[in-house]
Image 1 (spheres, rainbow over the protein chains, first blue to last red):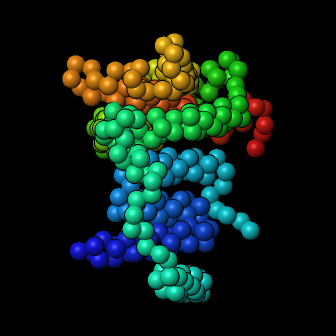
Image 2 (cartoon, rainbow over the protein chains, first blue to last red):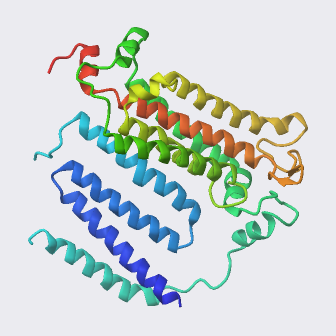
Image 3 (cartoon, rainbow over the protein chains, first blue to last red):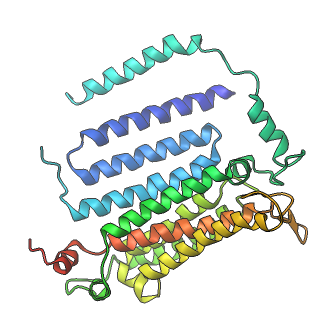
Length: 84
Length: 254
C-alpha cells in the first residue's frame, strides 16, 4: 500500500512547486508571502510522509510561522507592491 | 494564461528527467555502516547515549560539537540583527510609548482565540523540547515553536501588550543568554571529572528517580529551548517597532 503515500507525496511536491512559482511571479508581496506559506505547508506534509518528524517540527514553526511573519514585518516597513 | 506556460515547461522537464533517471539509480537496500552504528548504539550498546531518539542523540551527543557551532551561528545572526536596530536608553523608552493613532489591536474574537492558542502553543513547545530525548523533537524545534507565541500576541494585541506584561527586549535577551550560558556550562562540566568536552555518558545520570533523562541531552534541549525562544522574541520585539517611530527616533523625515 505504499502507492497511496507516494501519490500523496507527488501531489504535495507538485503543489509546492506550483505555489513557489506563483510566489516568484506575484507582484503583490503580501500575496507572495501567502503563496510561500502554502508551499511550506505542502512541503511539511511531504516531509511527514517521508518519515522525518524532526524536520517537520522545525519546518512548520519556521517556514509557516516565523518566516512568513518576518516577511510580513518587512513588507509593512517597505512597500507592498513590487515595482520593476 | 501566459504565466502558466513556463510552469508547464518546468513540470514537463521534471517529469521527463524523473522518468529517465529514476530507473537508472541503484536502489539502497542495505544500511550504511555509520547509520547502523547509530541505530544499534543510541540506546543499547557500548557507546550508548541512553536515548531511544536517535536523531537527538546524534545532534547533542555523537555530533554535539556540530550543533554547538550551529547554535553559535544562530546567535551571531541574532546579535547582527540587534546591532542593526541598536537604540540607547532614551530611544528605547521612546519606542515603548504607544503612538497616538494606536487603536488597541485586532477585534475581540481574534484576541479571545489568541489567548487560548498561546497557552496551547506554550504547552506544545515545552513538550516538544523536554521530550526531545524520547520522541521526535528537541531544543531548536521547541524553541522555534515557542517563538510563535509572542509573535501571535504581537499580531493580535500589540508589542506594547507584551512589554506591559514584562516581556521586553532586555528580558528576552537575558533568557537567551541564560540558554547560551547553560549550553556552554553543560558542555564544560565533563572536564571536571576527567572526561571530554560535551561527553554524555557515563558522567551525567541516565535516569533520575526512574525517569529516563538521557544524561546531558535533556539539559541541552532545555537550554537550547530557552535560547532559541528568547532570541527570536527579541528580534520580533525590535521588528514590531513601527517604522514611523523609528524614523522619528533617527530624525529622518518622510
